[in-house]
Length: 516
Image (cartoon, rainbow, N blue to C red; front, side, top):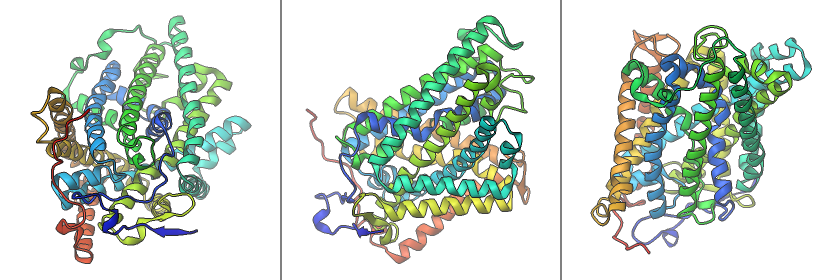
């Protein structure tokens, strides 16, 4: 495994701003490939099966409205990412941009938020992919004994580790390999979702299930949700369903037209996501309703895995197998592409001397951050194994804490956009909207969700119901992980102070440039 150290010297530094090249393989993917990678990281089929029921349980038939509400802050933040990427197309994305806006300490914590959120997601995706691997095997063989192998902890962990290793290997070999795998996996997901929607609408038309209901435009009105508490809980779930689209941006140094293509790809991915979520949610509600009994989406016995309950009744046995395959493909595809943002963020942080120099190495042949990718794979494997052996409750609570990390670094990035471009905001109406108003509004919305989530986490009833000294374990995990990042940051500042003194990546605003 040949690695080349790519921490550059002054000759590799852009004049006046400290932005550096990383040695990644440029022009590896285009607009379509970038959008597909963004979609893959979000994992739409996996997100739907795991949150359709939970969201319906919180807001009932207004689930589509909550999907729209969750889309709004993500769209506003996507504008911030697009504008920042035009000015500074760096694979460090949130880390690099917040450093340039607010300085090294805020930037480091923003980068940490992205990294730790990604490790948590990788662990969860690996577990879901493992479960659906054995469910699919059981469906194909017609054997309950095969499906039940997932319940054997040793078998589950070994299978999970094998999937993590495979995903790490594909990511290690570069964006070209990643792109080829993702076309197939994302294509399968979208085709099966379309088939599910058609068959669900047919079941609704014929009234095949007791809970079926007619479509109403009120489903799309978030103001008709019964309570703010229900809306807030549903919104938190909805925001999670869009997380990952920014992978398009973290691959910017490997994308054709790095200044504009990743931003456009992110917006395309967002539109496809909200469209697929709305159509699937509406079709499912029309077919089975949002009740708490039988096939109802809010049935607590099936709400955490809706497609497992609906596959056979809605699609029949053979098509139901396709739906299981699509969920497995969704989780596996996202597992593989989710290595992209964490590895490239770590690469950037190391390049700018915010992490040890060894992580700034790229593979000579594949032009990927090989060491960072392998380290992320090992960290995911260790984290999942330890959590599975110690406590399933802790593993569940780390997933609940994920929303805190997502809101944390997305909101910081949104505010960084407005501050970085503050001199541009009076230049034109477009600059005022896309560089200022939209990002700030998105940041405020996500900060509000962050604060509400933090408040709710204090209650031991949040998440698995476990507590530490009377405080909810989700709160302890979420805040504890952020504090751990602060401790590591202080250690790095003592070890290599140049970055933290602003000598490597310069904070400041860009000079005014008239766009063509």
